[in-house]
Each structure stands twice: as structure tokens, then as C-alpha cells.
Image 1 (tube, rainbow, N blue to C red):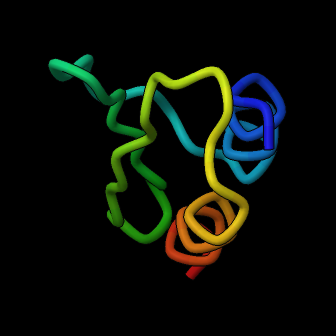
Image 2: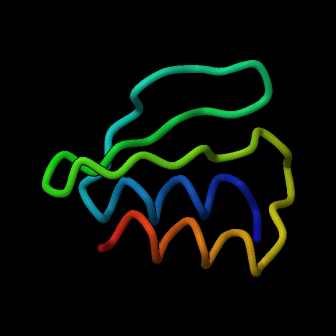
Length: 58
């Protein structure tokens, strides 16, 4: 999955960018308080992308 698509879907869930890390950006869901790192690679592994989305939805 392209990183831009993943970021768009993360933001559609209501998540906000918390901080920039070394190789990852951290997004937080303000409703649940859950944070997840999103890698800055152009392509993100499908399994990892769906894991990130599932964690941020909960």
C-alpha cells in the first residue's frame, strides 16, 4: 500500500499527527488515546498497513 493512501485512511479515522520520529511518524486517535508509528517508506507492507489501521480504529 502506498504511504499516501495509508496516511489518508489514518486521517479519515480522525487520527492526528503527534510527532515525527527518526524513520516513522506517530499518529494518535484522540478518541481512544491509541498511538501507532507509520513508517516513512513509499510502500508499506499490506499486513503492516492493515495492522496500523486496525489498532488506530479501536
